[in-house]
Length: 299
Length: 252
Ligand SMILES: Nc1ncnc2c1ncn2[C@@H]1O[C@H](COP(=O)(O)OP(=O)(O)O)[C@@H](O)[C@H]1O
Ligand SMILES: [Mg+2]
Image 1 (cartoon, each protein chain N blue to C red):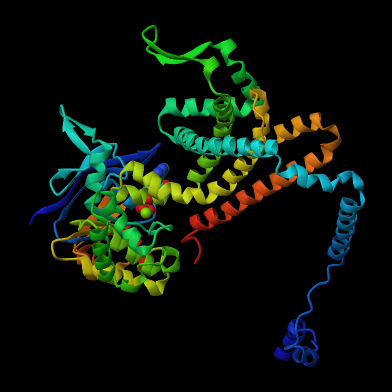
Image 2 (tube, rainbow over the protein chains, first blue to last red):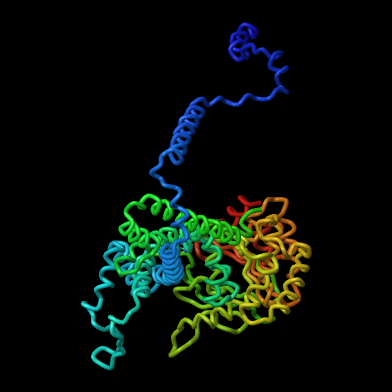
């Protein structure tokens, strides 16, 4: 009785026969990775295209490589680079500090500061940089002098016509850049764990030091990569300074190519090479800065 | 016996969630008080109110005869200036469940940060830091970063950090809840070593064995009110209230 009842159940549960013996002999063999023929084909196609293009760089005479060395350290080009670097460096520093201030405004508990900073970001993210620069260039027409003072009381004013073009340019770049960098800084600050603020408060560390020593260094881990992006953008955006009558690297290349129309291609090559070099230099600095702010982050 | 902490009518709501419903509690100087209670009962909020990390809606806290976070003006309680509150906090140690060490600073820098911030000369602060690290059994780790240590070691660093101003009162919010079971003992050992010598400890924990062994007084909190309090023998071994009994049957 029992055995007749159990037999079918036992049969159903019994595992299917497996070839145990051949499997056991494979236990020590290496697993063959999956082949990916698609990747090989893609690699091949890209390689062929690259080699083709590489060939044209030398076989196509219109590149006029011989003229590149003549231009690359030309006085005007170097002057342009000087301006690019100067404007970028000043605007980068100003817009970082300004970005921190606006970000703190947006994160503040004070309703007024919050609204003002939000409004700033809204305005300067909306208006194109080119427009801001043209506005600034025309400032003497709009406000012949600017200053501050007690409303309807004594004023301290300077004539706008006397403002240095570089100062105007840097102000324009920074006004726009602060709007972006403040968002980068704000997201960095938000990425720091709430417990860090709490621990700093519980230890009685003063407010400014809480920010400078505990929160900001941790926020910088995520700020730096995005901020470097911004700075590289700034490097190229400085070509818009032509609208305040300043010629940066690209501005000089444009001017030279209208004077020497036969050298347009080598001049563009020169500009490309310089931008590559400058961006590479920034990337190297980025590597070290990131490494510094990553201390303690890994086990 | 003198009083270390007095809490009067502590009341706090988050939106319409009434988290503390008028808590009165007196903690005697030099004792270890253990706060027990289910999750969400308001234990952390009460503990944080003691050093004004949480502002009370009503009621007040007195630590060592000083009102915390507020002063009396024209018959009302007014919040103190930030600087004053920070000064008060620096004299109350606080140890968090998640350690909250500063990950970008070395172990020694974690301990010396607050003393240096409040004016201790750097060399003196380092001296003090090394003494405190030795006290929690971490002499050889001062140059390491927090993430290079085990959870138990990190919490010991956090305790050393809380000791920087030699506080008379130390608050612990579930100091062992984030630890692997085998690391709980080393942290409880350090806490136990801090008891006595006039120092007052208030510990929120689910470690009933620790409460029984080290606790002088046990407080059972549920739903924002103190359901019962007494010696460990009274509250843990002979609880009078149904809610206490239910809670203990779950954690024991
Ligand atoms: N900052 C806050 N904002 C809103 N609600 C909170 C906040 N902090 C705590 N609470 C709520 O208060 C209640 C008690 O929390 P807590 O004191 O942390 O409890 P416990 O520590 O006993 O687990 C919970 O319901 C929690 O969700
Ligand atoms: Mg809690």
